[in-house]
Image (cartoon, rainbow, N blue to C red; front, side, top):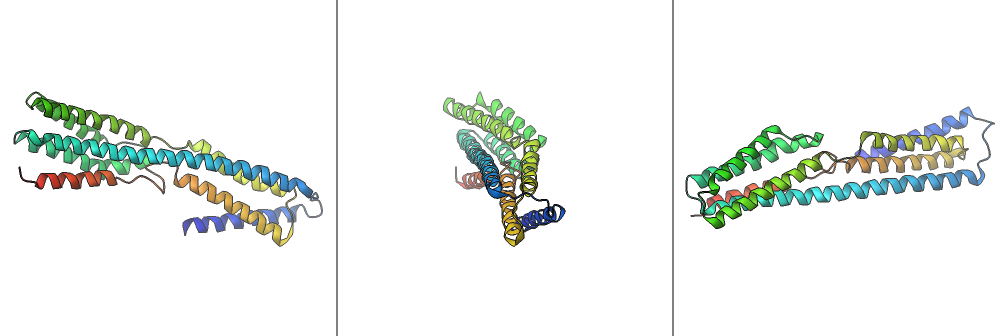
Length: 251
């Protein structure tokens, strides 16, 4: 519904600009001939190519971010599993710290990534987790110690990737350029002598609606964590469910 209203508004804007341009240049508009058709083809092709490039780039970034979230959640689950051979109460303390950090990612940090920032409380919880894991390595059996070390290393690495992805997105200047190009294109076509009459108004309205849809699509995919279409913390919620299941197992 939102995109439909945006496209209707853009079509009305394009038609209104065309009508106003014809009124202001009545009797002085040049005969468009094939010039407008050539201009429309060149400008539309360039705009579509740009939108397609930005869309593919944003989709790829989102797919990488989604895969990274599952890798990070998997590393946390592996870390939880690696605590199995630790003695109590150490095992319970480490597992509680893992759960707390995972929960903070979902409830505290994910909302802040919308604005490209991290939650410092969640970052501090990771440090606490790292220190706690380091403190038990010397006491743990060799194989368990290796599993804990490798899993903790994976948690650190995947978090760095997620934090880096949280700062991604198109620069505001590039987005402004894309919007400005669409607006100037409509004005340019009117000045070039866009055909008059109902067909001309409908034609430029449709073109403006297509431009609006392209810009909307880029904005929806612009940021892997903060746009209309974005990565959800599903992987970490599933990891918490898995941890609760493991905690309920006997032994």
